[in-house]
Image (cartoon, rainbow, N blue to C red):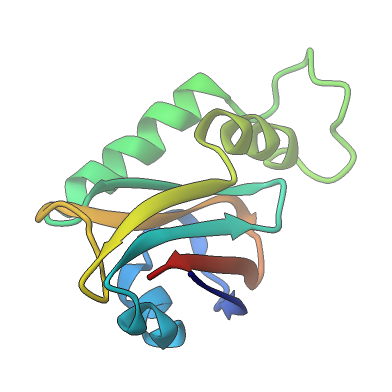
Length: 140
């Protein structure tokens, strides 16, 4: 079994849900050496998250943003953690709901995502800055 690991930094993006599948694949070419295996992608932040969902219709990503803004609204007077900005505590909640990592099978040197699936960087801050990922792949 082979194990590969790499740290990459995604460029800063505005708040929202962004497809990053191709950016990840371009930076982590070791995947191509594996016939079968698993790839874990982990984000090293508490106010951004990762998920897998539809890669075709951009309105899906807009609806995700709308749903999560309703679910964890800004300026809730009950938040105690409010000194880092109105978007900070909602960002922590959204990141916890979606999670900090995704697992994807590798088949014949490629991420074995469904035809309509893509990896989303879920940026929950208005100005989150660059985001760091740790990508680990293992297999044969």
